[in-house]
Image 1 (cartoon, rainbow, N blue to C red):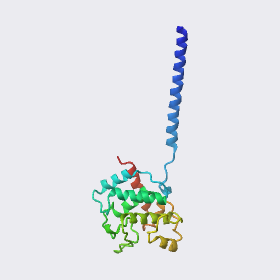
Image 2: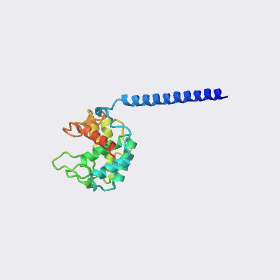
Image 3: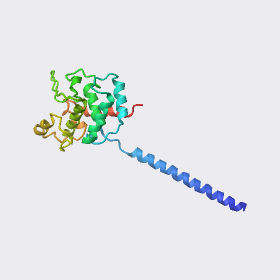
Image 4: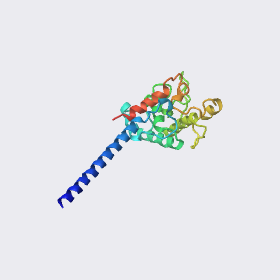
Length: 213
């Protein structure tokens, strides 16, 4: 009887050893697989796609950078507009918002565009005091921004009523750009001139937000 119990105990120990060994091998395999995954090149990050950062984190970042943003709505509402409009058009909402932060100095303005325009990406501004487009509400301004990004990245028409007054201008006058600029880095020298690192600056900002604690 004692011998039988001893054999059963030995088998139990063997099973446990094998179990822990397999578990350790599984963890090691997953770690190596994750380690071997290539980091996406900034030049390859697409304009179209789903947001990777939660809305709350975008709100937190904006408020940290500018406790008193010059907006005609709350920060929470503006972020929500970007995520809703971006989802409808399949445009990266988190990166579109980073672009708006870059263009407006985190909604402090100070250039040609004024807060009353609800123009978050410099649509229609050409310098020398030209203020560009005015939009009736923050949501309309966000929609115009998202639609303009769509015009660069795809020939598919917007799913919402067109409010971007420069959409057709891009389509008719710049066939070399319309639907041909699929990445954020591709905006360099096109959305902003000379803008040699324009897209990369937007991507770097999102990386900073992702790592924010």
